[in-house]
Length: 501
Image 1 (tube, rainbow, N blue to C red):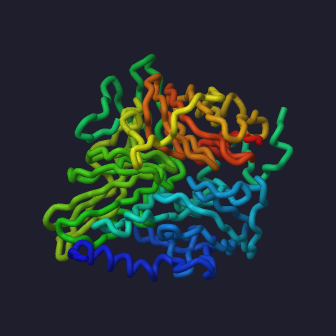
Image 2: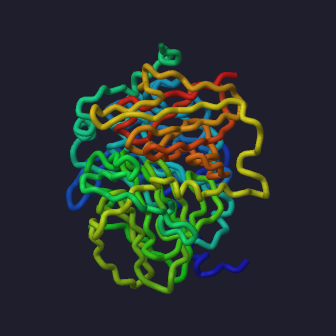
């Protein structure tokens, strides 16, 4: 078997990662360990104490090899209760990681074990307590496919956060201005039944008729209504815990190929990923493969992920930037060949970026990859359809699903095994990344246009837009369905997908 230099570098990187990313070599060995803990990072020269999910080697996150089970012992080393959700994965409901649905929060010092067969791809894990997620209690969860081990490419993870030096509770209080707090820890059984792709070669997102305002708003041509993009200016935007004042520099091979796994773990920020003019191929979203789409700028909302294949030029330093939507702030990392000159990159772009996917141009172009000639979601009659209305406003700061907040919510119901269509109709002036636990779904309609779209676990619904997703109802249990914008979730923008046998 011939090993190219690029392959040698990839193999060397994989070997080095053995010390950074603990793995199980064979069935029957001890589970991986994961600690919810505090840690200190440096942000623009200032020390900051944040939370984190630390593996047995003291690094953030986990990586599993092809075929490896998710066998993890999670210990709460914080001085407060917590619980961790394995975002996009489909564990048994008891292991899903939502407070009191069905298991309680982990007490300080408590350890809980998890064991399930994971979905392959780019995922992440995070606290399901909003203030803790805003305090960076999150980390990558990478489950490698068999082809990842044989592909002639180097894997790089870019994990994005928005960050404030102020306590998360103070940030949330300023954003919500005293709106009701629907405590994530207060879930109990009684609540079950209560009363385009800009930069793409073949598309290009049309932004005519809109303009970005200085206050983080965008004026929509239809009726002149103002879309709210960002409701808080964070102190910094991080890629792998660093700003552009001191970005991570990843050494790469000349003319090498990189698989960039981008994870948006921000609490309240959508980003554009800009490859600096080097064409990239989008090959997966939310861990699931799509028909490759080529471009230089790709967007992702909170909780979403992108896998980008990038073929690098001869030599040099190549910044990969994450641009805050509707603003000038940016973060990122640098891919650099040996000896390349590294130039300082400012954390402010010259101009504001556009709003993310306001007309669903990007989502509408994505197509699920056909694996071995089979469609991603086999065609079958729809057994049940739900229209889900997304609402809310900035004043008062309150966000709803079907006009209700958590605790007064009305469950969305289905029977296990049914083909279900969920249509999200956003009647508010903010976008909502909608995440369903315990399932993956296929995007099948955007603004009235039927498509065989991407397989996802989180779909972005811009203002005044409609998106329909199709899924097969899974385990009979209560599964969370919520907006992944943390201040929206905090004020109650959550319901449940109640599946019965």
